[in-house]
Length: 217
Length: 217
Picture (cartoon, each protein chain N blue to C red):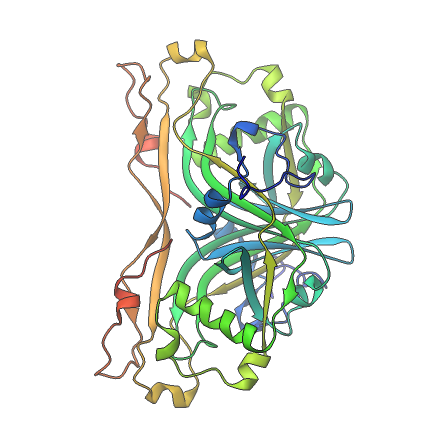
């Protein structure tokens, strides 16, 4: 384990299927950067809540945002949250139900978020737009003070982390390989379709490169 | 609201962007049935955990499974969990950062899971396989008693539910439509690739229809 890897804690120790576990920072960042969506788990009055939302990463910190009126975001301040980024890569069909599985890449980050303010908040919002669609921020109608106020941006350090993934074909019991059962993988991917221009775009406005060349990850 | 719709509770009331909310049961079931993956949020000793896992639905109940050794599954018995099924359908690029958004379909189910045993458990495991890959269960090497014991299946009724979704193009402030800014949608979809047979399939074994015709939803 190099100095840049994650320390294992009681929260991040992977007990089940340890061969699928990783505490490698680069590996975690590859996964986080491969899709803009995440799920965040909040506890409010002792009970679990969950919500999907956009996430973005800058260095060793992860960010997400929402309405300043959101009970989830407000509950998160000074509290622990768990954030998961997952890519579902395929259905693994083994010769037994028990060894059938999914291929996936999953990162869970535990932490206490803090709210960004001022310049740091503005930079984070720009970063969100420009990481997803490089260069778009400067082409947009600027955010008003009221819009910035109505938006809450949270961040937490990517420090307490577990990574779990599975790739490759089925791994069956030795004796099951003799059975006449079809086994294999059905790959699943998140794919980008052809961009659809808004009906009300002005005639002289061309599709920008950040749309033409849009990709996930 | 018809009798089959969900009642709104303090947990499921959608405060933010109520125009994106739905409590329609058929709509929720369409979303749940459109992808086999979900995220489950657990609370253990007051702190949030989150994990992606397969889900399947039978009637008005949702199911998921895992290792009987899983601390998540064990923590869930007699406790509240929140389960989310989400499809990310696109990036919505508005003329301002503030009105930019995602298209998505999201269902959150709150409840107290129970563990299935005996015939009910066996039926649920068969159901899981056959809903994903119709008819596959009978073609597989049967599950051993030990495998069944090592697997925990949880279920909860689909009763306390919120559905949130967004479709369509950007909705900008009136005056922003005059700006020479490209707006539109970049569609995202979960797509199924060409099945990859395992190297060790026996020569006489053909690809079954449930693989050839595999689809999500």
